[in-house]
Length: 625
Image 1 (cartoon, rainbow, N blue to C red):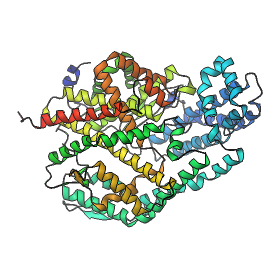
Image 2: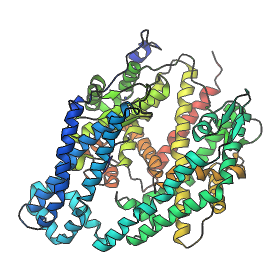
Image 3: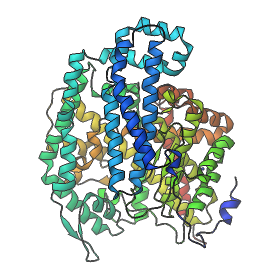
Image 4: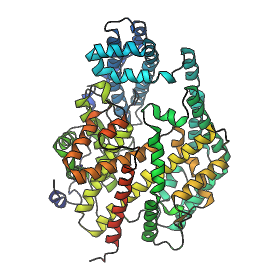
């Protein structure tokens, strides 16, 4: 889900079987109606001018925060109401800009919205320190005495007090703030160097075509069915990175040193604790993820042996054999937009009438921009921060299985947003990424199970199973490898040990070979490919990638419970969605029946993957009729 966060941000198989593989008439792309946000661009311009004045005036509120009476509630209400209006303003500008990236005024409008959020941030930077200055006793007394204040702002106020230990003096905060530009440079240098200045080799493929190996070209051609081409692509791409290993290593080491500095300055034990503090996520969850994944590596190794068999590779499986699909999509398999909606509604039937009603409402309304066109932004996301309107969904539907899966995923975010808005105030509706992605990946798993159960042919069933298995390799195991590597390199610096490009490659190689089973004879990883860390941009975004893995773990637990328990599991899952951001993600997960600090959810994921492989192997060994 891509949205503004912290202010800048699937009835029976009969219908499916009756649906044609392709529409007889080409469908008109769906376009969203931004008039629900502002009737015209001119109306947006007027709202922007008015909100700028409101944002400028916020600075004047700080002196009255401790005046007593209802001053605290009034101040927090004014700040919240301004943020709420700014969310609507930003959503319109962002969506309008993504309609056509070539339209200058739309891009300028988005910049205006971003700048206004920056101004809002500057003029409310005093708020948390001012709350802390009131003292815990006084703040909690006001919460106890004022039900309205407690209903809207209890979590915000308690969070401000929780941050007290890690908040510096005003002079210290100002000094730390002044380091942000410097500490953001490694990320900027990485993007500049890798996207623009890193020399890119050209390789000649088996069909005679020459390809310049940009990152996009590498990620496309590593899926080739021609094994020799995959090797050429890997050799060329990682060969170029190897030549820059020292530079990229020094740059990543600088990033880590900056993160360690900031964590120390805020009096955290280490960067992991600092990174998890905002969501109040116990570090035990991160470490349990790594421990349970190590214990579950035999499941990954089983899948890799299956990949070895299905690709018909003679000799050892190589690292460049990870990406070609196990099976091609069956001929004629298409999911146009209307069929995708119908299948999604059928697949998500276990989520119940309330969920499906909101999904139908969104499908029937003009909330989505569905198809690619020149100038339109790529990818897919939901923008759900316009609290007083409804979520908007950007898709780039191309009538294939991936488009269907993306639709189910993104509309999961849209229904989640509707449920949170309906049951939480603005100040408590915006939910954590941890919960957001679990909710939508649950949709993907329900869709996958439904498609397997209702597939009309052996080949179609095998294809759906192969897609689900590969998703678990990439979204779970690969991301945990990244997460373990990231923790390891941070701990190196925290313990006073140096990092170089060569050292980073050695550390990454050891982890990759363990994950992919080199010592067990599962896959061979050539030393030349151990520089893979050098092109993973997420390493410059703090501890980030692990959330993909924990989200899939949560989804596996939810989908299994929905399958085995029915209504009780559905009630817990829907309650989680309705909770929005009314509490931190860990206790909300636990209340929904998923404790990510225990082995059970991880074992549910491994059990699901093994169950899918059991079915795949049974079908693959069955003679065709």
